[in-house]
Image 1 (cartoon, rainbow, N blue to C red):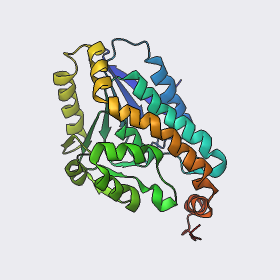
Image 2: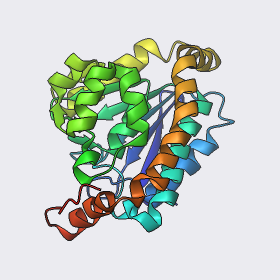
Image 3: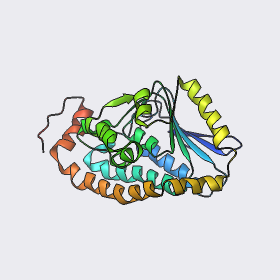
Image 4: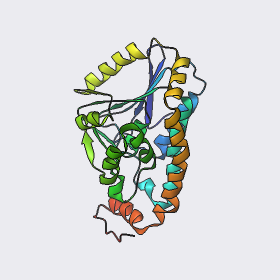
Length: 258
């Protein structure tokens, strides 16, 4: 039984709707990641599946990955499990849509970035705030430049600032923006009915593989490298550990600049 995600099948079981639901901010901790991984693994032989959607329960998509699991002693296992989700989505080649309301931050935005389409309502707030904690986001460091170009990606990655739905749409980060969550649901359903349902599940997967041939190679080539940089270099610095610990201690960080 799944504790932190729910799944619903719609459109004649052609669409799998995955709901992130931890009762709080839908934090991507090891348990939620494991449940998503288990579910995605079960789709490897589900030949009739035409689309996967991700959405957060309640007001928010996801506050991101668990900060507590970013501690040095657990960061390696956390990164390994999180990155496996990206490799699995890559290998499945099933089209994926993120439906975003409220906060979509850190690892939550990285999961959305791996999707083929990102839809949101006007409550959406998107950002990669990892630098504020003294660390960096490996998947976003690769995916953001591919999605929106290097200049805009560096804006978000280096400042750690959060942007609203309109600016995210202007950046090319969001494909469609709706007024509220009800309109987001209705608009996504209309898009699925028009653009996904009439098509072959098999052919859709080839379309995803073809459109992402460069995207997937860059992810495959560089994500292991950044994971190694994170664990073997970044987490050996005083400030990366101070950033994580100060956040958990609810105090201002005392940077040593090393």
